[in-house]
Image 1 (tube, rainbow, N blue to C red):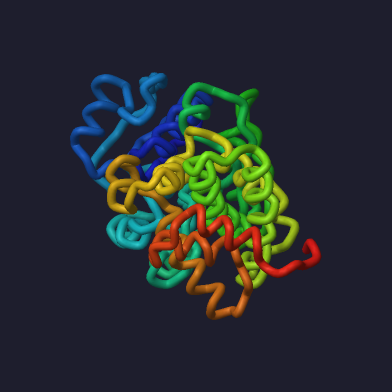
Image 2: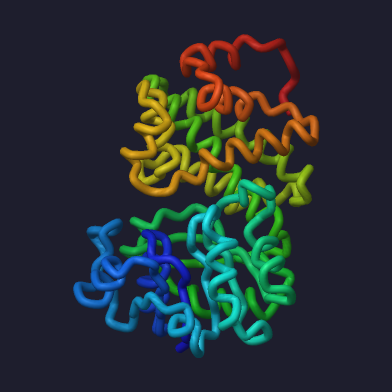
Length: 330
């Protein structure tokens, strides 16, 4: 049994807590909301996961110090936009040598375009850092639907620890050394999932989704490799695997956001209806800035950026994509 701290009490943080607790570990979640902590501690429920029951060996606290005390592994599960501020608040309680930190969120810091492991290392120099990613919905992990993920790090002991605490008949963990590629795959696929939602909102079907997944993967790979990821990583669990599940599943909040835009809702209306952080919206801005700086042609990204920020009508956007000049498949 290991003691594990989870920073973040959203659906993914709680789903990971449920899985780890059922696997025999003692889990302590940090939350910034008393209401969520009370629900977890007293009723053993999470409002985002109505079908899940939280085991007794999961506790929730509003204290960083209490959450991190004695932890042998820290999972960072707050949305990307809150990562730096959150880490700044708890870093004083981290034992750098003995408490590895694993990023379980998927996103890029908007202001700096840095991956989340880079953000943590800037705030906690010398930290042992990894990233856990792959095709996974909190709704399914929380009820023990078989799931396969990848943990990336240069730290071999960290990767082994993650495998040890997570793996059972319901979850398998592969390892990778390419933390940059794994993080970028997880962040950039949200953009294509958003596009898939737009297509669904317009009323398009499977042919369109398949086109978005395959051509979207090309764009993810181009930008990801330019930013330092390994090409092969984007064909793996954190790239293609995660892309498939978020583009096709109704569980995906990024797909749902795109769906609402495709149906004619405004960005503000969409944010209000989804009710949770939509990572793809910030990621679209960041990826557009990076692709412009690197002079990389990414037609799908450019088009969805124009839908969100330049009032391009979604059906017109599809027409523009489909009628571009002829080219060879890459």
